[in-house]
Length: 150
Ligand code: FES
Picture 1 (tube, helix red, strand yellow):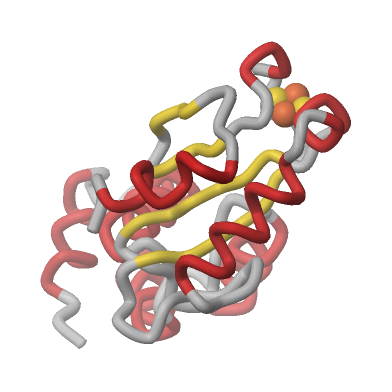
Picture 2 (tube, helix red, strand yellow; picture 1 turned 180 degrees about the vertical axis):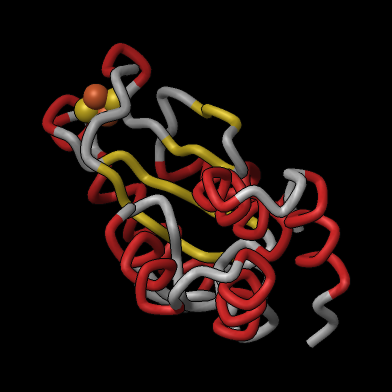
């Protein structure tokens, strides 16, 4: 893989060891996950033990060590969204993409994830696509919603 982007991110923080978390966040934003090669490179450039960086990457749930899709489709499965039909919305998304929760479509376009309450319960059932909130979604709207991101 081309690691030039990783080098640029590390340089943008002045190769400061204290900025390791920010570096990892920027790499995740650039690649949608933390590639193993990128973690190795960060360890080398910041002269930090690989184990230390790997531990941080696995500790924070916001980091993903497996490839994720170009678009992240997150379904809230918190109580308020659940009682308003989130399981049916999730099932419809899984049917639409032919994958299950946590998986990525074979073309690398979409990943389905679930989360437990993001504090927008009045909008339930809630689907978040690439950080954009779509509230009061029902199953009939799922296809239209995702087609905007295809
Ligand atoms: S339960 Fe979905 S936002 Fe709170």
